Length: 317
Image (tube, rainbow, N blue to C red):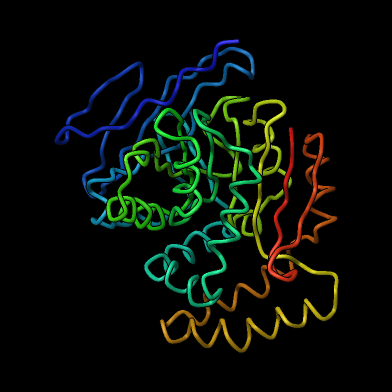
């Protein structure tokens, strides 16, 4: 079966409205984001057209020009409107605020171990050369860069996040650490609960520290399952909600006595206090496995990493 048409790369030529392969491209006057909309096709679910919901590609060459869009909770692109819940809005704002120091704090707080966990996550996704892959909730791009090297210049990486500031940071990092394969990465502003891709579009999916922050986790898992090719894997890395008293106590102590005090030196005390409650409201490994099965995955296995402080859920459609 022929794959759906690949997403057209967004490109800005001055401030003109251009058209390529049926896609309409436009640029806002106060943003370095290119908003891309595609015409809807009224075919079956498997013919769902890419980018038919709100999506935007970050212009890599203009990534340094950070900007913010007007504050309402209703965003419109063509005839499509997306409304975000207040909880989602708050989390989006939180990650936008921490974007400038996110990578530096990760290195310090994990003593660099987060890089090992992320390599494991990508490895367990089984992404290979030439694959089309999705890095959902991509943040500042660590997993996307690793995936890019895995799939090579013949592959494609769609890196999706709801925070423009995080994506601008990621695009800037791509410029700073340039490798030829990084040309295969597209930075896309999108909603994990309504992914702008057709069914069975990706050969692998990764999620790094994102599922825990999604408002509707069952729906997010169903979306991941929908866009995966049958037999393909998703690898979902996050903090582990341990059922062991010692591990849970150690994790709680570290957040209160290491993470929050260090974050406070960056003026981000309240932002990192959120971490503790987000973990307590998250799911255990067994609960994540159950959630994945209910979402339609054929198999699901949760693995503990970092002495039980982290976990990676590996699921197969």
